[in-house]
Amino acid sequence: MKNHRKSPLDSHHIDPQVCSIDLRLEILSKAPFFAGLSHEQLKEINSFFRENGFQKGDRIYYEGDAASRLYAIATGRVKLTRHTPAGKNILLDILVPGEFFGSLIPEQNDEYPETAQALTDACILSIGAEAFQRIMLLHPSISVKVLLALKDRLKNAHETVRQLSAYAVEKRIAHTLLKLGEKLGERQEIGLLIQVPLSRDDLGDMTGTTTETASRVISQFQKKGWVLTGRQWIAITHWEALTSLVDEELY
Amino acid sequence: MKNHRKSPLDSHHIDPQVCSIDLRLEILSKAPFFAGLSHEQLKEINSFFRENGFQKGDRIYYEGDAASRLYAIATGRVKLTRHTPAGKNILLDILVPGEFFGSLIPEQNDEYPETAQALTDACILSIGAEAFQRIMLLHPSISVKVLLALKDRLKNAHETVRQLSAYAVEKRIAHTLLKLGEKLGERQEIGLLIQVPLSRDDLGDMTGTTTETASRVISQFQKKGWVLTGRQWIAITHWEALTSLVDEELY
DNA sequence: CGGTAGTTTGAACTACGTCAAGGGTCGTGG
DNA sequence: CCACGACCCTTGACGTAGTTCAAACTACCG
Image (cartoon, rainbow over all chains, first blue to last red; front, side, top):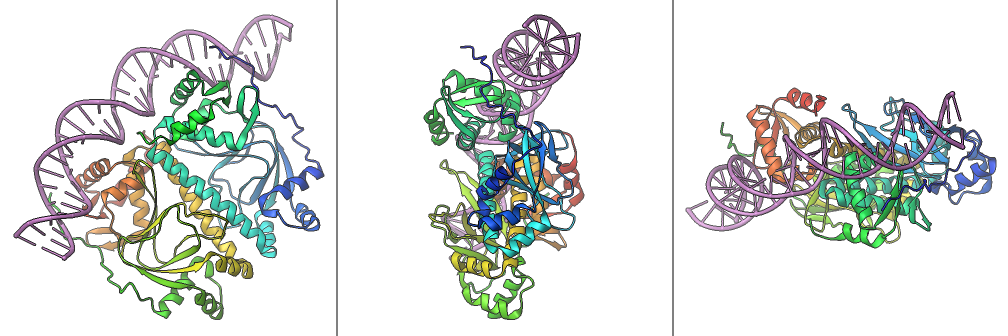
């Protein structure tokens, strides 16, 4: 029953200081809101972005910092968290290349409402909020795309509210694993591996519970053969079992 | 200790079928995203809207309906809810005149993610999602305003997630009362009256708890002299007590 | 004035948090 | 390359906040 295998996660050891120009253009063109722009336009927009490398664990910005820039992930994973004075963390989202975060629009005295931290070494593009606003005013189709993305995030946030309000921990964790599997899953021999370093603590912070409870639930899942897991990684081995747990109407 | 006063809520008995043209223009001009448009432009935009009256309790649309229109409140209050198969409700937001809801952007096979229900008799303006998108493409400044509004809602939703994840029921209810007080509060002799019919059930649905627990907590608050309450109404009588309960760091 | 719908309170139960201790994995430095 | 220390994970025992079920009470409407 022991599973002390080495972590199956890709290390993706990039030189964090370098995003090749090709990569930048590719990232920008893949970002949902620049879809449909010409190569010329993309190149011009690209010139407004600057890039920064971050190492695993680095904070990109802190909750409460003056909000001035919009960020987009070129490579790596970023997590967004909020905190409580009592020291509890809330993990709001895990973002992948092509996704954006930070300040979409310049506002007076605006603060970042969350902290952004690199979960892996990461290359991050960023642009001043004013510059981005100028781009949006110039290309109205972009704002519509941004709107769609925001609408989607709002829907997700509301779904999280529903989960926290109405479902027991076991279901919330199963649901979260499935969502992570869809977004970050990578098919491997061991199962659908969630490609991001994810501790029990993180999982607890995503589902509004404690490290210990998250650990107990995951242990149960593993005993039942639904997941395979180790230090900072999880793979889903029995997708249907998790979905049927989530969908069953019983309390 | 008895408080069986008549409900102090305004009844606002409007004829739900009528929004005067002046009212419509005023509503639209007050809506954050049309701020700064000329009277001419407003009039033109106004022509795209149609109006409908709803009586207290009427559903405007249901979660899962095909999403096709954007709504704006002229008069009255609207609540947005989600549901679970087990029958539990989640109250996501209470909206007031000038606020919008529904479908911001037309998308293939899009469904409303929540149910919209009139909390009072209400006059609601609405516009087809395609028409609104055309307006946004024509007036890029509008999309930026819409973006700001969405960003604000996302922040609120994340705050709700934080509340549900990290705070005990008592604090969540106190916090919710304060937010409601800010948004819907009306200074009266009895205190800051929350101007909307709000049952214990609703309050439970807003804070992820049950009717009974909401009732118990509110009873405590009333015993301590922090609120005055009756059937479907609450007034805050001791604002500072609630804020200090919310802010204290103890668990 | 009677009925419906909202509110209150009690008592029993339970999911989950808390506290505590022990074991495994990984990276770092010798 | 090995060994140490830091960090992560697991499991147990216990306490309690909040749910559930049930019953009585009260405001409001027709």
